[in-house]
Image 1 (cartoon, each protein chain N blue to C red):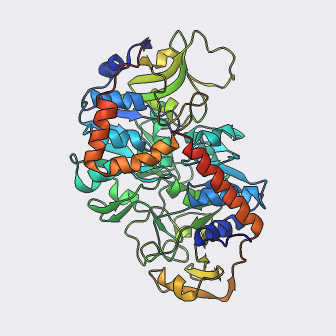
Image 2 (image 1 turned 30 degrees about the horizontal axis):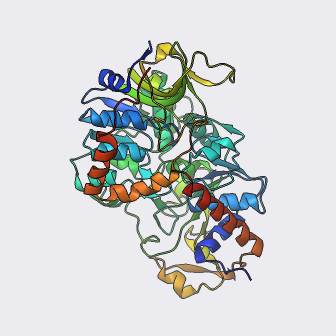
Image 3 (image 1 turned 180 degrees about the horizontal axis):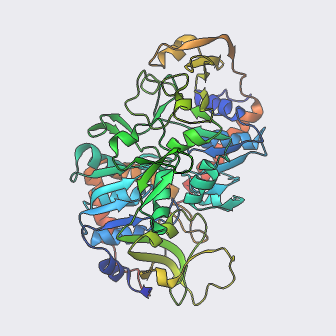
Length: 258
Length: 276
Protein backbone atom coordinates (compact mmCIF):
# COMPACT_ATOMS: atom_id res chain seq x y z
CA UNK A 1 0.00 0.00 0.00
CA UNK A 2 1.48 3.33 -1.07
CA UNK A 3 1.51 6.09 1.56
CA UNK A 4 -1.16 8.66 0.56
CA UNK A 5 -0.07 11.90 -1.09
CA UNK A 6 0.65 14.97 1.01
CA UNK A 7 -0.96 18.24 -0.14
CA UNK A 8 2.43 19.39 -1.49
CA UNK A 9 2.83 16.17 -3.47
CA UNK A 10 -0.70 16.56 -4.83
CA UNK A 11 0.17 20.12 -5.90
CA UNK A 12 3.31 18.99 -7.71
CA UNK A 13 1.50 16.11 -9.43
CA UNK A 14 -1.43 18.29 -10.52
CA UNK A 15 1.05 20.85 -11.86
CA UNK A 16 2.99 18.19 -13.75
CA UNK A 17 -0.18 16.96 -15.44
CA UNK A 18 -0.75 20.41 -16.96
CA UNK A 19 2.39 20.03 -19.10
CA UNK A 20 2.54 18.37 -22.52
CA UNK A 21 5.34 16.48 -24.21
CA UNK A 22 5.43 19.12 -26.95
CA UNK A 23 5.88 22.03 -24.51
CA UNK A 24 8.96 24.21 -24.34
CA UNK A 25 8.95 25.22 -20.71
CA UNK A 26 10.79 27.97 -18.82
CA UNK A 27 11.26 26.54 -15.34
CA UNK A 28 11.39 28.41 -12.04
CA UNK A 29 13.14 26.88 -9.05
CA UNK A 30 11.34 25.00 -6.24
CA UNK A 31 7.86 23.55 -6.81
CA UNK A 32 7.85 24.41 -10.56
CA UNK A 33 11.12 22.53 -11.06
CA UNK A 34 9.79 19.43 -9.31
CA UNK A 35 6.58 19.52 -11.38
CA UNK A 36 8.40 19.99 -14.70
CA UNK A 37 10.80 17.14 -14.06
CA UNK A 38 8.00 14.88 -12.84
CA UNK A 39 6.19 15.57 -16.12
CA UNK A 40 9.35 14.71 -18.06
CA UNK A 41 9.78 11.45 -16.12
CA UNK A 42 6.14 10.36 -16.56
CA UNK A 43 3.72 11.43 -19.31
CA UNK A 44 5.78 14.11 -21.12
CA UNK A 45 9.16 12.58 -22.01
CA UNK A 46 9.63 14.91 -24.98
CA UNK A 47 9.22 18.16 -22.99
CA UNK A 48 11.96 20.76 -23.44
CA UNK A 49 12.98 22.26 -20.10
CA UNK A 50 14.82 25.57 -20.09
CA UNK A 51 16.32 27.24 -17.01
CA UNK A 52 17.25 30.92 -17.07
CA UNK A 53 20.93 30.14 -16.47
CA UNK A 54 21.04 29.34 -20.19
CA UNK A 55 20.57 25.56 -20.16
CA UNK A 56 18.32 24.38 -23.00
CA UNK A 57 16.64 20.94 -23.09
CA UNK A 58 18.14 19.82 -19.81
CA UNK A 59 17.43 16.40 -18.25
CA UNK A 60 18.67 16.51 -14.67
CA UNK A 61 18.79 13.20 -12.77
CA UNK A 62 18.25 15.08 -9.47
CA UNK A 63 16.43 18.36 -8.80
CA UNK A 64 18.74 21.37 -8.84
CA UNK A 65 18.86 23.55 -5.74
CA UNK A 66 19.53 26.63 -7.87
CA UNK A 67 18.67 27.51 -11.48
CA UNK A 68 22.34 27.07 -12.38
CA UNK A 69 23.46 23.81 -10.79
CA UNK A 70 26.09 21.92 -12.78
CA UNK A 71 23.64 19.04 -13.22
CA UNK A 72 21.57 21.27 -15.54
CA UNK A 73 24.51 22.15 -17.76
CA UNK A 74 25.90 18.59 -17.81
CA UNK A 75 22.61 17.17 -19.08
CA UNK A 76 21.57 20.03 -21.43
CA UNK A 77 21.48 19.87 -25.21
CA UNK A 78 23.25 23.23 -25.24
CA UNK A 79 24.01 26.08 -22.84
CA UNK A 80 23.81 29.70 -23.98
CA UNK A 81 24.77 32.96 -22.28
CA UNK A 82 22.25 34.72 -20.05
CA UNK A 83 21.78 37.70 -22.42
CA UNK A 84 21.10 35.26 -25.27
CA UNK A 85 18.62 33.35 -23.09
CA UNK A 86 16.59 36.44 -22.32
CA UNK A 87 16.86 38.05 -25.77
CA UNK A 88 16.61 35.27 -28.37
CA UNK A 89 14.79 32.55 -26.51
CA UNK A 90 12.43 34.30 -24.08
CA UNK A 91 11.80 37.66 -25.78
CA UNK A 92 12.08 35.85 -29.13
CA UNK A 93 8.85 34.04 -28.30
CA UNK A 94 10.23 30.49 -28.38
CA UNK A 95 8.79 29.38 -25.02
CA UNK A 96 5.29 27.88 -24.83
CA UNK A 97 4.89 27.70 -21.03
CA UNK A 98 6.43 29.67 -18.18
CA UNK A 99 6.15 28.12 -14.74
CA UNK A 100 6.18 30.59 -11.84
CA UNK A 101 5.76 30.59 -8.09
CA UNK A 102 5.45 33.61 -5.85
CA UNK A 103 5.09 34.87 -2.32
CA UNK A 104 1.74 36.56 -2.97
CA UNK A 105 -0.94 36.42 -5.65
CA UNK A 106 -4.14 38.39 -6.23
CA UNK A 107 -7.46 37.47 -7.85
CA UNK A 108 -6.12 38.34 -11.31
CA UNK A 109 -3.00 36.20 -10.84
CA UNK A 110 -0.63 39.14 -10.61
CA UNK A 111 2.34 38.09 -8.46
CA UNK A 112 4.46 39.76 -5.78
CA UNK A 113 7.92 38.45 -4.95
CA UNK A 114 9.46 41.87 -4.20
CA UNK A 115 8.37 43.42 -0.94
CA UNK A 116 5.75 43.39 1.84
CA UNK A 117 5.07 46.87 3.21
CA UNK A 118 6.37 50.08 1.66
CA UNK A 119 9.15 49.68 -0.92
CA UNK A 120 11.41 52.22 0.83
CA UNK A 121 10.68 50.91 4.32
CA UNK A 122 9.87 47.26 3.82
CA UNK A 123 8.38 45.04 6.48
CA UNK A 124 9.74 42.05 4.60
CA UNK A 125 12.21 42.35 1.78
CA UNK A 126 11.67 39.41 -0.62
CA UNK A 127 14.19 38.33 -3.30
CA UNK A 128 12.66 40.35 -6.16
CA UNK A 129 11.59 39.57 -9.68
CA UNK A 130 14.55 37.85 -11.33
CA UNK A 131 13.29 36.57 -14.66
CA UNK A 132 9.60 36.73 -13.75
CA UNK A 133 8.56 40.17 -15.12
CA UNK A 134 9.53 39.15 -18.66
CA UNK A 135 8.65 35.44 -18.33
CA UNK A 136 5.12 36.60 -17.48
CA UNK A 137 4.69 38.50 -20.75
CA UNK A 138 6.76 36.51 -23.27
CA UNK A 139 5.80 32.86 -22.66
CA UNK A 140 2.76 31.57 -24.57
CA UNK A 141 0.98 30.92 -21.28
CA UNK A 142 1.82 30.86 -17.58
CA UNK A 143 1.19 28.21 -14.96
CA UNK A 144 1.55 29.24 -11.33
CA UNK A 145 2.04 26.88 -8.43
CA UNK A 146 1.68 28.09 -4.82
CA UNK A 147 0.46 26.68 -1.51
CA UNK A 148 -2.72 28.38 -0.28
CA UNK A 149 -2.84 30.66 2.76
CA UNK A 150 -4.53 33.98 3.48
CA UNK A 151 -1.17 35.78 3.59
CA UNK A 152 -0.27 34.43 0.16
CA UNK A 153 -3.63 34.73 -1.64
CA UNK A 154 -4.37 38.38 -0.89
CA UNK A 155 -7.07 40.90 -1.79
CA UNK A 156 -4.55 43.57 -2.77
CA UNK A 157 -0.87 43.20 -3.60
CA UNK A 158 1.51 45.76 -2.07
CA UNK A 159 3.73 45.43 -5.17
CA UNK A 160 3.21 43.87 -8.60
CA UNK A 161 6.39 42.02 -9.58
CA UNK A 162 4.95 40.23 -12.60
CA UNK A 163 1.80 40.81 -14.61
CA UNK A 164 -1.10 38.39 -14.59
CA UNK A 165 -4.43 39.68 -15.84
CA UNK A 166 -3.82 43.17 -14.44
CA UNK A 167 -7.12 44.69 -13.31
CA UNK A 168 -9.28 42.36 -15.42
CA UNK A 169 -10.45 42.01 -19.03
CA UNK A 170 -8.36 43.91 -21.58
CA UNK A 171 -5.50 44.76 -19.20
CA UNK A 172 -2.84 42.75 -21.01
CA UNK A 173 -4.08 43.83 -24.44
CA UNK A 174 -3.94 47.52 -23.42
CA UNK A 175 -0.27 47.08 -22.57
CA UNK A 176 0.38 45.50 -25.96
CA UNK A 177 0.97 42.07 -24.47
CA UNK A 178 -0.15 39.35 -26.88
CA UNK A 179 0.44 36.21 -24.80
CA UNK A 180 -2.27 34.47 -22.77
CA UNK A 181 -0.87 35.07 -19.28
CA UNK A 182 -1.76 32.82 -16.33
CA UNK A 183 -4.14 30.09 -17.49
CA UNK A 184 -3.88 27.88 -14.41
CA UNK A 185 -2.98 28.26 -10.74
CA UNK A 186 -2.22 24.93 -9.12
CA UNK A 187 -2.35 24.97 -5.31
CA UNK A 188 -2.06 22.34 -2.60
CA UNK A 189 -5.86 22.25 -2.29
CA UNK A 190 -7.28 22.99 -5.73
CA UNK A 191 -6.79 24.18 -9.28
CA UNK A 192 -7.96 27.67 -10.30
CA UNK A 193 -8.44 29.12 -13.76
CA UNK A 194 -9.28 32.66 -14.82
CA UNK A 195 -12.96 33.12 -15.61
CA UNK A 196 -13.30 33.57 -19.40
CA UNK A 197 -15.33 36.78 -18.95
CA UNK A 198 -13.98 38.48 -15.82
CA UNK A 199 -10.44 37.00 -15.79
CA UNK A 200 -10.87 36.48 -12.03
CA UNK A 201 -9.38 33.26 -10.65
CA UNK A 202 -12.09 30.66 -10.14
CA UNK A 203 -11.76 27.23 -8.53
CA UNK A 204 -12.33 24.60 -11.22
CA UNK A 205 -11.18 21.48 -9.40
CA UNK A 206 -10.78 20.41 -5.75
CA UNK A 207 -8.03 17.97 -4.83
CA UNK A 208 -9.22 14.75 -3.15
CA UNK A 209 -10.06 15.43 0.49
CA UNK A 210 -9.95 19.24 0.13
CA UNK A 211 -13.13 21.07 1.11
CA UNK A 212 -14.61 24.35 -0.12
CA UNK A 213 -14.27 25.68 3.42
CA UNK A 214 -10.53 24.94 3.58
CA UNK A 215 -10.00 26.56 0.18
CA UNK A 216 -11.98 29.64 1.22
CA UNK A 217 -10.04 29.90 4.48
CA UNK A 218 -6.76 29.90 2.56
CA UNK A 219 -7.75 32.84 0.39
CA UNK A 220 -7.88 36.54 1.27
CA UNK A 221 -10.64 37.46 -1.20
CA UNK A 222 -14.11 36.00 -1.69
CA UNK A 223 -13.27 33.13 -3.94
CA UNK A 224 -15.61 31.97 -6.70
CA UNK A 225 -16.16 28.33 -7.60
CA UNK A 226 -16.90 27.22 -11.15
CA UNK A 227 -20.33 25.77 -11.86
CA UNK A 228 -18.93 22.52 -13.14
CA UNK A 229 -16.57 22.14 -10.18
CA UNK A 230 -14.80 18.80 -10.45
CA UNK A 231 -12.50 16.71 -8.28
CA UNK A 232 -8.84 16.38 -9.24
CA UNK A 233 -7.99 12.77 -10.10
CA UNK A 234 -6.00 11.27 -7.21
CA UNK A 235 -2.30 10.66 -7.77
CA UNK A 236 -1.51 7.36 -9.43
CA UNK A 237 0.94 4.98 -7.79
CA UNK A 238 3.36 5.69 -10.63
CA UNK A 239 3.20 9.47 -10.20
CA UNK A 240 3.83 9.19 -6.47
CA UNK A 241 6.62 6.65 -6.84
CA UNK A 242 8.45 8.69 -9.48
CA UNK A 243 8.10 11.93 -7.49
CA UNK A 244 9.28 10.36 -4.22
CA UNK A 245 12.16 8.67 -5.95
CA UNK A 246 13.18 12.01 -7.49
CA UNK A 247 13.09 13.76 -4.10
CA UNK A 248 15.02 10.93 -2.45
CA UNK A 249 17.73 10.98 -5.15
CA UNK A 250 17.92 14.76 -4.74
CA UNK A 251 18.21 14.58 -0.95
CA UNK A 252 21.04 12.05 -1.15
CA UNK A 253 22.89 13.99 -3.85
CA UNK A 254 22.72 17.35 -2.04
CA UNK A 255 23.71 15.85 1.32
CA UNK A 256 26.95 14.70 -0.27
CA UNK A 257 27.85 18.17 -1.60
CA UNK A 258 29.79 20.13 0.97
CA UNK B 1 47.22 43.49 -21.04
CA UNK B 2 46.89 40.65 -18.62
CA UNK B 3 49.38 40.34 -15.81
CA UNK B 4 49.60 37.46 -13.39
CA UNK B 5 49.59 38.64 -9.78
CA UNK B 6 48.85 37.30 -6.35
CA UNK B 7 45.20 37.63 -5.38
CA UNK B 8 46.18 40.22 -2.77
CA UNK B 9 48.01 42.38 -5.32
CA UNK B 10 45.35 41.92 -8.00
CA UNK B 11 42.62 43.26 -5.71
CA UNK B 12 44.85 45.99 -4.27
CA UNK B 13 45.74 47.20 -7.77
CA UNK B 14 42.30 47.12 -9.34
CA UNK B 15 39.69 47.82 -6.63
CA UNK B 16 39.46 51.19 -4.87
CA UNK B 17 37.10 52.66 -2.30
CA UNK B 18 34.00 54.08 -3.98
CA UNK B 19 34.36 51.96 -7.13
CA UNK B 20 31.46 50.55 -9.12
CA UNK B 21 32.22 46.83 -9.03
CA UNK B 22 30.51 44.00 -10.94
CA UNK B 23 31.31 40.51 -9.66
CA UNK B 24 29.53 38.10 -11.99
CA UNK B 25 29.03 34.37 -12.35
CA UNK B 26 25.47 33.06 -12.72
CA UNK B 27 25.37 30.43 -9.94
CA UNK B 28 28.46 28.92 -11.60
CA UNK B 29 31.97 30.43 -11.17
CA UNK B 30 31.06 33.02 -8.52
CA UNK B 31 34.32 34.80 -7.54
CA UNK B 32 34.19 34.06 -3.80
CA UNK B 33 37.95 34.19 -3.14
CA UNK B 34 38.21 37.61 -4.77
CA UNK B 35 35.22 38.87 -2.77
CA UNK B 36 36.82 37.64 0.44
CA UNK B 37 40.02 39.48 -0.43
CA UNK B 38 38.03 42.71 -0.93
CA UNK B 39 36.55 42.20 2.54
CA UNK B 40 40.00 41.56 4.05
CA UNK B 41 41.39 44.70 2.43
CA UNK B 42 38.53 46.70 3.96
CA UNK B 43 37.24 48.37 0.78
CA UNK B 44 34.37 50.79 1.48
CA UNK B 45 31.55 52.65 -0.29
CA UNK B 46 31.43 50.23 -3.21
CA UNK B 47 28.53 50.17 -5.62
CA UNK B 48 28.05 46.46 -6.11
CA UNK B 49 26.40 45.23 -9.31
CA UNK B 50 25.32 41.64 -9.72
CA UNK B 51 22.23 39.95 -11.20
CA UNK B 52 21.96 37.52 -8.27
CA UNK B 53 23.74 38.90 -5.19
CA UNK B 54 24.10 35.37 -3.75
CA UNK B 55 26.13 34.62 -0.61
CA UNK B 56 29.16 36.61 -1.78
CA UNK B 57 27.30 39.94 -1.75
CA UNK B 58 25.53 38.95 1.48
CA UNK B 59 29.04 38.75 2.98
CA UNK B 60 30.30 42.02 1.43
CA UNK B 61 27.15 43.85 2.54
CA UNK B 62 27.23 42.42 6.05
CA UNK B 63 30.90 43.39 6.41
CA UNK B 64 30.12 47.01 5.50
CA UNK B 65 31.83 47.20 2.07
CA UNK B 66 28.80 48.38 0.07
CA UNK B 67 27.04 51.72 -0.26
CA UNK B 68 24.72 50.67 -3.06
CA UNK B 69 23.49 47.43 -4.60
CA UNK B 70 22.30 47.07 -8.20
CA UNK B 71 20.60 43.68 -8.68
CA UNK B 72 17.72 41.67 -10.09
CA UNK B 73 17.20 38.70 -7.71
CA UNK B 74 18.44 38.83 -4.14
CA UNK B 75 17.87 35.45 -2.55
CA UNK B 76 19.72 32.32 -1.50
CA UNK B 77 18.74 30.07 -4.43
CA UNK B 78 16.42 27.25 -3.39
CA UNK B 79 16.92 28.12 0.30
CA UNK B 80 15.34 31.51 1.09
CA UNK B 81 16.49 34.97 2.07
CA UNK B 82 19.89 36.61 2.04
CA UNK B 83 19.68 37.71 5.68
CA UNK B 84 22.55 40.22 5.64
CA UNK B 85 21.12 41.93 2.56
CA UNK B 86 17.69 41.99 4.18
CA UNK B 87 19.06 43.38 7.44
CA UNK B 88 20.78 46.18 5.51
CA UNK B 89 17.64 47.04 3.51
CA UNK B 90 15.14 46.63 6.36
CA UNK B 91 17.20 47.87 9.36
CA UNK B 92 20.21 49.69 7.82
CA UNK B 93 22.68 47.31 9.46
CA UNK B 94 25.64 47.72 9.45
CA UNK B 95 24.64 50.94 7.66
CA UNK B 96 22.22 52.21 5.05
CA UNK B 97 22.29 50.40 1.68
CA UNK B 98 20.81 52.09 -1.40
CA UNK B 99 19.29 49.74 -3.92
CA UNK B 100 18.66 49.93 -7.64
CA UNK B 101 16.48 47.01 -8.62
CA UNK B 102 15.87 45.54 -12.07
CA UNK B 103 14.68 42.35 -13.73
CA UNK B 104 17.11 39.74 -15.07
CA UNK B 105 16.24 40.67 -18.65
CA UNK B 106 17.06 44.32 -17.94
CA UNK B 107 20.40 43.52 -16.29
CA UNK B 108 21.44 41.07 -19.02
CA UNK B 109 20.58 43.63 -21.68
CA UNK B 110 22.37 46.39 -19.74
CA UNK B 111 25.59 44.36 -19.54
CA UNK B 112 25.39 43.61 -23.23
CA UNK B 113 24.86 47.30 -23.99
CA UNK B 114 27.91 48.12 -21.86
CA UNK B 115 30.04 45.60 -23.73
CA UNK B 116 28.75 47.03 -27.02
CA UNK B 117 29.71 50.58 -25.96
CA UNK B 118 26.11 51.78 -26.14
CA UNK B 119 24.61 54.27 -23.66
CA UNK B 120 21.49 52.22 -22.93
CA UNK B 121 19.76 48.92 -23.52
CA UNK B 122 16.39 48.47 -25.20
CA UNK B 123 14.08 45.51 -24.76
CA UNK B 124 10.43 44.53 -24.44
CA UNK B 125 9.69 44.31 -20.75
CA UNK B 126 8.51 45.79 -17.44
CA UNK B 127 4.88 45.82 -18.59
CA UNK B 128 2.15 46.16 -15.98
CA UNK B 129 4.52 46.03 -13.01
CA UNK B 130 5.45 48.36 -10.12
CA UNK B 131 9.24 48.44 -10.44
CA UNK B 132 9.37 51.42 -12.89
CA UNK B 133 7.58 53.51 -10.21
CA UNK B 134 10.39 52.98 -7.70
CA UNK B 135 13.41 52.89 -10.04
CA UNK B 136 13.87 56.12 -12.04
CA UNK B 137 16.46 54.37 -14.22
CA UNK B 138 13.69 52.32 -15.84
CA UNK B 139 12.44 54.44 -18.72
CA UNK B 140 11.11 53.93 -22.22
CA UNK B 141 12.01 54.68 -25.80
CA UNK B 142 9.82 54.75 -28.90
CA UNK B 143 10.90 52.66 -31.88
CA UNK B 144 11.52 55.10 -34.78
CA UNK B 145 10.33 52.48 -37.28
CA UNK B 146 7.21 50.98 -35.72
CA UNK B 147 6.24 53.42 -32.97
CA UNK B 148 6.34 50.64 -30.37
CA UNK B 149 7.21 51.84 -26.87
CA UNK B 150 10.01 49.71 -25.42
CA UNK B 151 11.76 49.57 -22.05
CA UNK B 152 15.14 51.29 -21.70
CA UNK B 153 17.75 51.05 -18.94
CA UNK B 154 21.24 52.57 -18.76
CA UNK B 155 24.16 50.43 -19.89
CA UNK B 156 26.18 48.86 -17.09
CA UNK B 157 29.69 50.38 -17.17
CA UNK B 158 31.56 49.27 -14.04
CA UNK B 159 34.92 50.60 -12.94
CA UNK B 160 36.01 47.02 -12.45
CA UNK B 161 34.63 43.58 -13.29
CA UNK B 162 35.63 40.57 -11.23
CA UNK B 163 35.06 37.04 -12.48
CA UNK B 164 36.33 33.52 -11.83
CA UNK B 165 37.20 31.38 -14.86
CA UNK B 166 38.47 27.86 -15.49
CA UNK B 167 41.88 28.43 -17.05
CA UNK B 168 44.33 31.04 -18.17
CA UNK B 169 47.05 30.17 -20.67
CA UNK B 170 50.64 31.43 -20.52
CA UNK B 171 49.78 34.65 -22.37
CA UNK B 172 46.82 35.39 -20.09
CA UNK B 173 43.99 34.37 -22.40
CA UNK B 174 41.05 33.24 -20.26
CA UNK B 175 38.76 30.25 -20.86
CA UNK B 176 35.18 29.95 -19.54
CA UNK B 177 33.04 26.87 -20.14
CA UNK B 178 29.73 25.59 -18.78
CA UNK B 179 27.14 28.13 -17.67
CA UNK B 180 28.77 31.33 -18.90
CA UNK B 181 26.23 33.82 -17.52
CA UNK B 182 27.15 37.44 -18.23
CA UNK B 183 30.86 37.23 -17.40
CA UNK B 184 32.15 38.03 -20.89
CA UNK B 185 29.83 41.01 -21.12
CA UNK B 186 30.82 42.20 -17.62
CA UNK B 187 34.54 42.20 -18.43
CA UNK B 188 34.07 43.89 -21.81
CA UNK B 189 31.79 46.54 -20.26
CA UNK B 190 34.31 47.46 -17.54
CA UNK B 191 37.33 49.76 -17.45
CA UNK B 192 39.41 47.31 -15.40
CA UNK B 193 39.12 43.65 -14.49
CA UNK B 194 40.31 40.95 -12.13
CA UNK B 195 40.07 37.33 -13.24
CA UNK B 196 40.75 34.48 -10.84
CA UNK B 197 41.26 31.06 -12.44
CA UNK B 198 41.35 27.46 -11.32
CA UNK B 199 44.66 26.84 -13.08
CA UNK B 200 47.27 28.28 -15.38
CA UNK B 201 48.22 26.12 -18.35
CA UNK B 202 50.80 26.55 -21.08
CA UNK B 203 48.20 26.14 -23.81
CA UNK B 204 44.44 25.41 -23.77
CA UNK B 205 44.93 22.46 -26.15
CA UNK B 206 41.98 20.96 -28.05
CA UNK B 207 38.74 22.83 -27.49
CA UNK B 208 35.53 23.76 -29.26
CA UNK B 209 35.98 26.38 -31.96
CA UNK B 210 33.27 28.31 -30.09
CA UNK B 211 34.71 28.11 -26.59
CA UNK B 212 34.17 31.33 -24.64
CA UNK B 213 37.55 33.02 -24.47
CA UNK B 214 38.54 36.46 -23.26
CA UNK B 215 41.73 37.41 -25.17
CA UNK B 216 44.62 38.50 -22.92
CA UNK B 217 44.44 42.08 -24.16
CA UNK B 218 40.89 42.44 -22.76
CA UNK B 219 41.86 41.31 -19.26
CA UNK B 220 43.57 43.21 -16.43
CA UNK B 221 44.94 41.23 -13.50
CA UNK B 222 44.83 37.44 -13.28
CA UNK B 223 45.31 35.47 -10.07
CA UNK B 224 45.50 31.68 -9.91
CA UNK B 225 43.15 30.63 -7.10
CA UNK B 226 42.21 26.94 -7.09
CA UNK B 227 38.69 26.47 -5.64
CA UNK B 228 38.28 30.25 -5.89
CA UNK B 229 34.58 29.84 -6.71
CA UNK B 230 33.75 27.63 -3.71
CA UNK B 231 30.98 27.23 -2.42
CA UNK B 232 29.69 27.86 -5.95
CA UNK B 233 31.33 25.58 -8.49
CA UNK B 234 33.73 25.28 -11.40
CA UNK B 235 32.60 23.11 -14.32
CA UNK B 236 34.82 20.03 -14.51
CA UNK B 237 36.66 20.87 -11.23
CA UNK B 238 34.23 20.69 -8.31
CA UNK B 239 30.49 20.72 -7.65
CA UNK B 240 28.33 23.40 -6.07
CA UNK B 241 28.34 22.98 -2.28
CA UNK B 242 24.56 22.91 -1.98
CA UNK B 243 24.76 21.90 1.68
CA UNK B 244 26.84 25.01 2.42
CA UNK B 245 24.20 27.19 0.76
CA UNK B 246 21.68 25.55 3.09
CA UNK B 247 23.95 26.01 6.13
CA UNK B 248 24.47 29.71 5.28
CA UNK B 249 20.84 30.41 6.18
CA UNK B 250 21.52 29.81 9.89
CA UNK B 251 24.96 31.46 9.85
CA UNK B 252 23.71 34.68 8.28
CA UNK B 253 20.42 34.97 10.16
CA UNK B 254 22.06 36.37 13.28
CA UNK B 255 24.52 39.31 13.27
CA UNK B 256 26.89 37.87 15.88
CA UNK B 257 26.96 34.40 14.33
CA UNK B 258 27.66 35.99 10.97
CA UNK B 259 30.51 38.16 12.28
CA UNK B 260 32.06 35.23 14.11
CA UNK B 261 31.90 33.07 11.00
CA UNK B 262 33.45 35.79 8.83
CA UNK B 263 36.20 36.39 11.37
CA UNK B 264 37.08 32.71 11.55
CA UNK B 265 36.71 31.78 7.87
CA UNK B 266 37.54 34.96 5.94
CA UNK B 267 39.39 37.54 8.05
CA UNK B 268 41.80 35.02 9.55
CA UNK B 269 42.18 33.01 6.34
CA UNK B 270 45.37 33.20 4.37
CA UNK B 271 44.98 35.84 1.68
CA UNK B 272 47.28 34.04 -0.66
CA UNK B 273 46.28 30.66 -1.87
CA UNK B 274 47.79 32.71 -4.68
CA UNK B 275 50.84 32.17 -6.88
CA UNK B 276 51.05 32.90 -10.51
